[in-house]
Length: 282
Length: 292
Image (cartoon, each protein chain N blue to C red):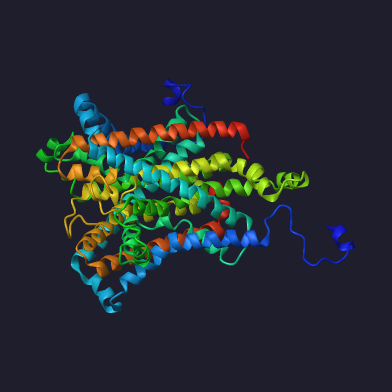
């Protein structure tokens, strides 16, 4: 049917079931994803600009957004460094336990966030394994932005490792041999010859870890202590607004979060495109 | 290499120009190991240590609580609905996207991945705005006696949204790389469309399907943020296992909280083991990204 009425929308094929498969997929997508998101957009539009602005510039809203984006950014930077190190070690070296570590990197994907959350809280609380040590030197981890950052490091780690790892595997050793033959030191070869191939993937991993960290809820709320304007993250503020039946407040914060996240992903995509052009895809 | 065989014996073997010195390698592996131990393994170990802190008896007693059992049942029920739904969605989306070429395919791919870039809390919020008491359809639902928010249907919907892309994104790249030749051959030989799908396509993607289902299930059973927003936290009725952990933890019932957590941690370990096994044994029949 679609073939007759709209001949240019798809290439002809002998396989059956296009209409059924696409129909079900699009219907499911609309019902589960698009319709609810449209409700969010409609609700945001129904709030007057003045009210929107007053909720958006509320000090509690602003400090929650600053905290969520700030801790997610620092955690993503830490993950970029250690994720690259882990990917390097897993791809380049063979040592006992390598396969176990390779499999374990995905643990944060598999472990429910609430489980990770209470475990982190138990570790970093003032009476916990690491928390008590930190307490002796006067460092508070739980119930501070530092604790939130540590939880986000746990959540974001696999994103960086899993995006960098396959690209690092593809890097040809020829270019390293060439660099070495031309007299470059090993450090210079790694920094100036190998790593530039990794940058686009590293940036993608960073962006994924960052985006996940901004929205993360379960693993953070237990360790955060949720003190308004100190350790209250934006997703938690949405939950608090909803519990007060303040749909408008929740919608404004959610809209701001989505807008900032998409804007940042857009910038990162543009940066990535530039770095791919500069160094070429491996 | 042949040259070095002829020269005088050396005190130590020369370092390869394309690798780091032994010392640097040990330092890098050591740093990575310490980082992993502190960040990944310590939380996992702590879950089991805290669960058994007051002995095995108290640990196992935690599971006789009727609210805990209700939470386990609800979690299983939600996963039993959400995972098959997303598996069917993944199969139909990948059939349409991978086996046909049509306008708007890239947009469709982007939209399918959308739930990954939304905070789980926002995934719950959108359903509250749609079906909640003050939501767009709230009055109509109330007039007709349908409960979605603060009830099981809302939990199922939020879980479906959060786990939506898992199966599809495993199947699409694999089915794209497999092409349509085998299906065309089957059809030419007279097989019906469904016969072709079940006997040609499905066997080709079965391990990738299992892989996607495993990840989807782990996330469905462990989802916290989205479910927390729509559940209403009614003990024994709308508490899933992760929500029950939160309640127990906030009541300072740490042993019970960690005992329930060990079940979910066990699920995570089984998922990881099964996933790793699939990657090792059937790497050729998984999407390219998983060929380690």
